[in-house]
Amino acid sequence: MTIWQPDLGDKSGPKYILIAEAIGEGIAQGTLKERDRMPVQRDLAYWLGLSLNTVSRAYAEAIRRGYLQGEVGRGTYVRRTGPIPVQQVQAGMARSSSGPIDFTLNLPAAGEGAAALAKSLETLQGSQSLAAYLDYQTEVEAPRHAEAAAAWLRNLGLDIENDGVILTNGAQHGLLVSLLATARPGDVLLTETMTYGPIKAMARHLGLKLRPLAMDDGGLSPAALDAACRESAAKVLYCLPTLQTPTTITMTEARRHEIAAIAKKHELLIIEDDVFGFLPPERPAPLACHAPDNTVFLTSTSKCLAPGLRVGFLYAPPRLRRPLRAAVNLSCWMPPPLMAEIASSWIIDGTADKLNQFQRSEAQARQEMARRILAGHDVRADPHGFHLWLSLPQHWWAESFRAAAERQGVKVLTGETFVINQAKAPNAIRLCLSHEPSRARVSRGLEIIAGLLDETGDAGGLVV
Ligand SMILES: Cc1ncc(COP(=O)(O)O)c(C=O)c1O
Image (tube, rainbow, N blue to C red; front, side, top):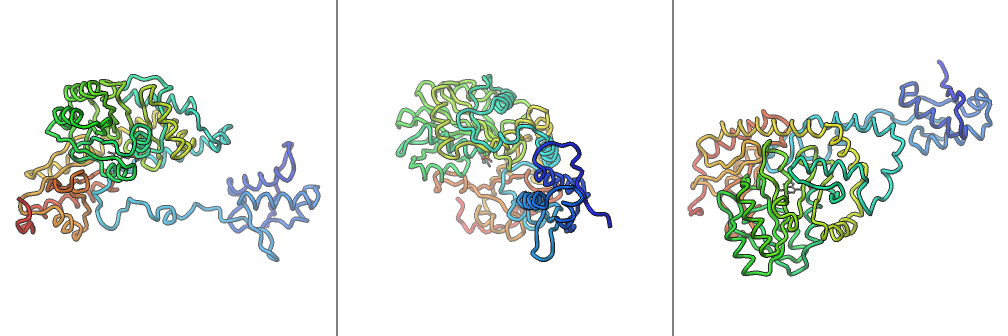
């Protein structure tokens, strides 16, 4: 048996650190394997011509770094070096290829993100500036991250400078930060009649009164917005102009122009949630272009790259940047610079565009599947969206339909999740097609939904 000996060559630095580093390298290169027994300290000291004390310190340092473990009376061993078992990493994660087919989560398809992450981690490993990612960055974004974020937002149609972008921990955090910075307890928050569900809990916690506004086939109704601004002291509107959830509506350029004009007239602030804005290959310009002084624009990398990155972007007029930054600091100090670096490197080297393209084509393929399987039913969908909105026939009550689908292994959300006023929940369900791991499971889930739609149902006269 050959005995492991480090080659310290002519490296400079304390010998005990060099030995500890050599142990780490040996593990990385495979010359030291899990459970290998390390040389007895006295022997290693003799071979290297060092003192026993230096080798003892080196082993202690290697133990501190997690390379070795010592067992009293049994010597020192290489610790487990293999990858962490995948089941341990996946426990508690949402995506599964067994169990119920889940159409409730509006998340992207699993693409090549893991391969891109592996590459980024490898690059980061060789970086000279790793320590910077472990420090506070509370004042402004690192210039590289601001530049990448601004480039991303320019792709979405915003004509902006690098220095106006604020990083958040995703769009949900961006939304919270926007409300913290612009609304006070007791204020009225205007929303579309049906909207992103968590806004309800957020408003409740912040003491805001929600006032839902009517929508038509073009999205938020300008007349309803104008009336609400005249009748109430509302100062903030939250809305989703592109691929609205749950309705899938994208406001036209003309509708955006009208909404922006009303906001300017009443000095209303718009919080524009654009998380799906990257999906349509051609899209109308954001509301923030029509009313730049009245809009906080927010989006994130969750839908286009990966939800676990937790990187979001806020862009706001100069007068709001200080309060928004203060709200970021208050709620989390700062988004982790390491995650911002990963997202930024993907934007800069073109990986983000590739991942984005994948989401677009996967979304289109799944929408096409839904169009075929649900043909003849009352579906509202956009060929580029992740989700669709299915109005149920008279003989089905949404809650009964949801329960029946769940009994057959398919999870969906009903209209109640999205309405502000529970009494007005439409008899409809939302189906999110992208996050399921395979097209085969999406197809099976849609067949089950189509089969149920054709069944008698059990509305029992509840739907009028
Ligand atoms: C409409 C909408 N806005 C915001 C978010 C939050 O996104 P993030 O994961 O970036 O926090 C979601 C997530 O589902 C969403 O659907």
